[in-house]
Each structure stands twice: as C-alpha cells, then as structure tokens.
Length: 429
Ligand code: GLV
Ligand code: MN
Ligand code: MN
Image (tube, rainbow, N blue to C red; front, side, top):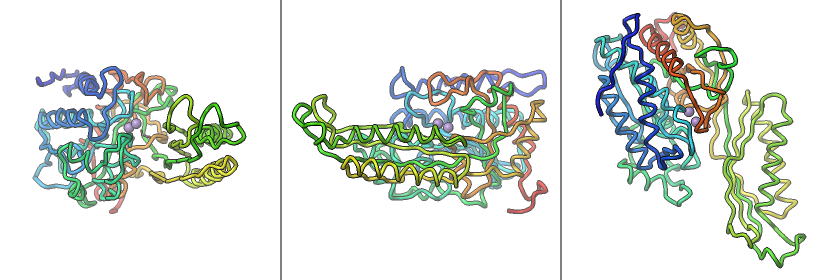
C-alpha cells in the first residue's frame, strides 16, 4: 500500500479527515461479499483486514502485533520505553450488511492521530496504544465483546466450545485464523499498564444531528442482555395435522416476537427489545416446524429497569410456550451492566471538544461498546461523532468528512493534553 498523503491545515497540524475517510473506504472493500459488507470474527476477510490495519499502525510509527484473540495492537512509546499507556481503540468486525463506520472510524482515527504525533516527532509522558478489537458485534458466536474481554482478562474459556451457524467451533476457527486457542490468556492486560481507555465511535443515533453538533461526550454505555431461545414442538405434515393438534414451534416463536415488540413499545421509559435472528427446522413449505430458535436483545437506560423488564418478558415467553405445549430452552448469552464514563476522563474529553471550538454536549450510548469490557481494568470514556440520520447497522451509515476530521482533531487534542488520573487533580484510583 502506498503511503497516504496528509494535507496540512492552516494551524500547521495535519487535516486527518481525508486519510481517515480513504482508509474507511479501503477497509470496507474487505468483506465476505462485495455487495453487502460483512467482516465476521475469524473469517478470511477478518484476517486480511487485520493485516492491513497492522501495516497502517507500523506506518504510523507503532510497533504492531496480533494478540492471542486476534486483536490488532499498536504501541507508540512515550518519552521513554515501557511507560503505562493511554489506550485508544474500537472494533474491526462488523454486523452483516453493515455500514463501514461502526468500529473502524474509532480505530482508524486513533491510528491517524498517532501518525500525526509521529510525523511531528512528538513523544508524550505516557505511551499511546491503539487496539482494533476483533469481536465486538458478537455476530458469529453467541457471546460478544470477545476481543475486549480477552484484553480485560475476563474471556470465558468455555466460549471456545461455542459453534457458529455452520457448526464450526470457536476453537477451530481460531486455529484456521492462525491463533492458538490454548493461549488466549496471553492477550490479557493489567490495570497497571493502562492510564485509561478512550474510544471514538459514531453515535449510531440522531441526537448530535438534531443538535447540530459534530461530536458529543458520552456519559455512560447502556447495559444489555442477550438471550438465545429454543422452542421445541412437533414436526408434522402440513396437510394432514388439524390445527388444534399442532405444536408449531415457529408459530410460537412468532407470538413471542410480537409480544416482545408490544411489551417494549408500551414502555415509555426507553426499553428496547429486538429479535434479530430466527431459524426454523426443518424448514420446508409442507412441514410444520418442529423447532424454532431465536435471539433476544434487551436494553434499557438503567440496569434495574432492564432487569425488571427482562423478568417480565421471560415470564411471558414461558407462558406462551406452556399454552402451546412447546418445550422452551432459554439461555442468557450475554449480559453487561451499564458502564459509566469516568468523570475525570469525561472532563478531559469535554475540554478537548471545547478547545477545538465545538459546543460541549453530553449524551448516553444506547449501543454497546468495548468499553463495557475494558471497565474491568481501566477507567473508560467515549467521544461520539455525528452520523447521518442516526442510521447504523445499515449500509446507509454515513459520516461527513468534516465530522470525521472534527472527531480526529478532538481525539488528537485529548491525547496531547491527556493527564493521567493521578496528575489530573482527580486523585488516585
Ligand atoms: C453493538 O453494536 C451493539 O450495541 O449491539
Ligand atoms: Mn455495531
Ligand atoms: Mn460499534
């Protein structure tokens, strides 16, 4: 790959937006299918993308490596080797038929910021590390945040036995990718190695656009619970079994899905519920489905609210299964509490926003992010960048070049002005 030219702005600092948008486009071409962006954990495209990102990290003056779970990790030393780091990052996996900004914007922007420091020969009194997390979306296997959990040392080994829809285990997929599933522990970092974790990400909602602002300071990342439901009934002949005798698993799942939608709609306080995947067996026009599997994703602005709603939804699913004489298996595949952004760090993000001449605006994140795992070893903060129409998890996802540039300026300012908690007046952790 040829080195990207970076134009200088009037301030003498490089304008990073062009480089960032160019790389977003380059990365989006690495996909399972050309027409629908999909870069799924441990797939061949995922590996190709990792290699490209590693090359960008090296070009930016970092040492770069793939860690034990497939995270791409770059390190830019501080004014002496081995200092604790300010960690920046986001993820490089995508959902299916994804937009190209969700994840890569934060990762690529962080690399461009380090490249800018490097071009100017600027070393800081701490290291800067950039991590491209391998699996934030959780599309392939039931669990999510696998990359950041490995870094936080909270990766659950039993996840290695989970299988994708093609029946391939995570363990085997890791071997194919070139990783050793028996050494995931090597990806873990310790609290002592990090001053903080800061992630830039597209907002994925309409609030910044409504407020006519390019960037926003995140207050907290909303918690989420994900479940896998399996309903077992009885397969049978579509022409011969009278309606009253049927144990149709798919019809039961359909009733559950509509119930979830109605239940969440009737909640005025921001509860959201999504069934994003369903599968029916045996899957033939003239066979009554004997088995239906579906996923459930429940989020709410507060943890008690989410937990109460979830308990109610589970009771209702159980009642539907019982009335329809279906056997229900319900497993929690992912659970994350709401993660507040650290006030001392959030204040530094706000200062950087103000210093770049933008209005300081705070907003929560309804979407999940790697900070939800990183909180176990570090204080966390996030900077949101406006996206058009609030559209995300959709190929229409879009960020204006000027907003990508604004996000980069704020992040670079934050990095250059960063003061570790001990020296920021906020006291020691
Ligand atoms: C990640 O994108 C999530 O919030 O599901
Ligand atoms: Mn996403
Ligand atoms: Mn994301």
